[in-house]
Image (cartoon, rainbow, N blue to C red; front, top):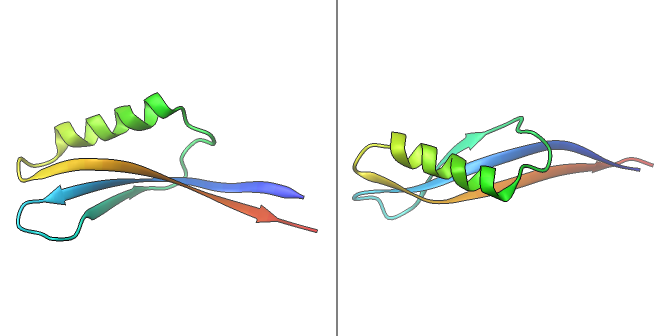
Length: 68
């Protein structure tokens, strides 16, 4: 049997002077969030981020458990 366990969103942002992207994670997100809502979350973080950082993307990670 397939059971959804968790959905997590990761906001990926680029900071000035850093080569690698940084990530801010949000755990325990509603199951199957709408694409528009995910993108809107990225906009919110972009507005709240310091001038030296810019949101690049939002990554959705879904953990699923399979039980016999």
